[in-house]
Image 1 (spheres, rainbow over the protein chains, first blue to last red):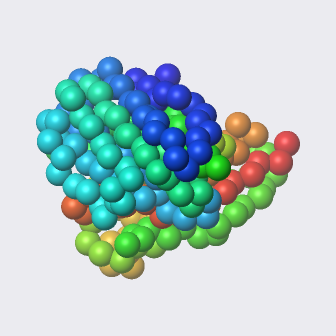
Image 2 (cartoon, one colour; image 1 turned 120 degrees about the vertical axis):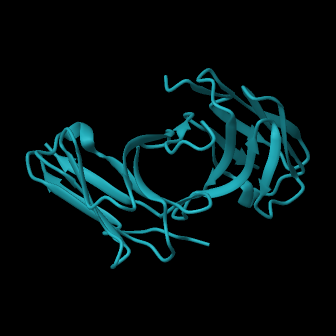
Length: 112
Length: 108
């Protein structure tokens, strides 16, 4: 366990479904991130939250909707996804101003 | 946009040999980090080297940084089967940006 917990580990959803990914960190960090990892592509930064405020939205389609109710929890709400959205979604946290990121184990999402 | 590019994309070596992976990047950085990822899992932070450092060691890991060439290398000495994983460099300028990774396979 890295201190960053993601649930669920695996998710299969239809294109009309609505689901949410959850990330929780127990490290006292104040910055949290969502990354998307597709096959043979670099990790793509999706969203950044610093002190619960969204500070970056990396041109992510509106079918992905993040929520950060407090500095320990981060959600990614999904609706009307496309098959090309199938990927490993990774959450990470860090102490703002510090250097290393701590990653969760990811949620493997398959859109059918 | 992609910042780091690892080379080679895949590497297979015998257990006990040394493994060297390279990373090139394009813009100015504050520091460069190496991460490891086991298949389908999250990334684990291995080592960080700051822009004013040239070499850093951590156990069997040795990282070099050449800011004039915008390149870094990760050396794993005396490789073990458990080192089989993908290795990513990540550069920190305004944000953490990853390369596509090197898939390392250690053959027992």
